[in-house]
Length: 88
Image (cartoon, rainbow, N blue to C red; front, side):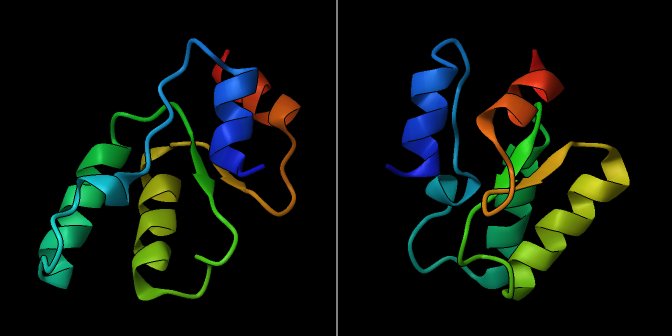
């Protein structure tokens, strides 16, 4: 199952959101990043999904999390228990 499905199953009272879901198709990169980062500011934590680590946008998002204190987890090495501990 996907990380999103696992999180929804394990944390049914939490809202699981993917910032990119709020970016309109064809949106200019800078505007898309502002939308994604704005959505991230509502998060209790961010889970970086496998396959997103090398993009320029993911790098900006990770840097933003670090700078403003949003716990950031790597899907490849993080357990659901670690995420629960950080947000509950």
